[in-house]
Amino acid sequence: MNVQPRLIAVAAASVLGLSACATTYPGSYAGSPPPVSSSGVCYDCGTVTRIETTGVVGTQRSGTTGAVIGGLVGAAAGRQIANDSSTGKRNVATVAGAAAGAAAGAAIERNMGTGGTGTYNVYVRMDDGRETVVSQTDLGGIREGTRVRVYNGRAWVR
Image (cartoon, rainbow, N blue to C red):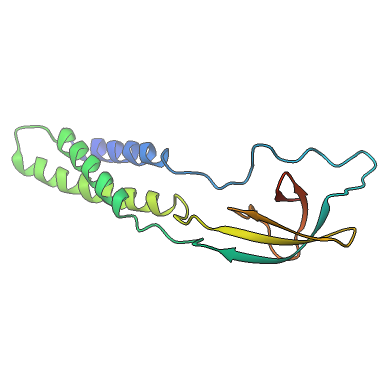
């Protein structure tokens, strides 16, 4: 029986299983602002003039924990796949599974997002001339010059 197709299948299943642990980009938020009035006038809209970073924002995860966990899962899967009387095949499959699992686990953890806990101060020049500042933990696509709506203590892209 050829071990390679089964090894590839288990490795693929492991990668898919581990990818379920990754978080998604915060593109949609619960509690987004209600639509602008039917007259088209937006009393809480403006343009971002400045963004300040406070605290630790944007630190990259190392991937070490993901590599260790992925390596253990991959080694166990590889050993199980090659569980026959040939010790040489079992050892090769175990090492191959550990290497594939470690690489996949590290990549998944690095892509899970930032490990920072800081905030952004978003300065907004409102359409009526006022300037307001909101603090939030993510920008959600906001940049300087972006049209936003300030609602419920945060800026939302219009």
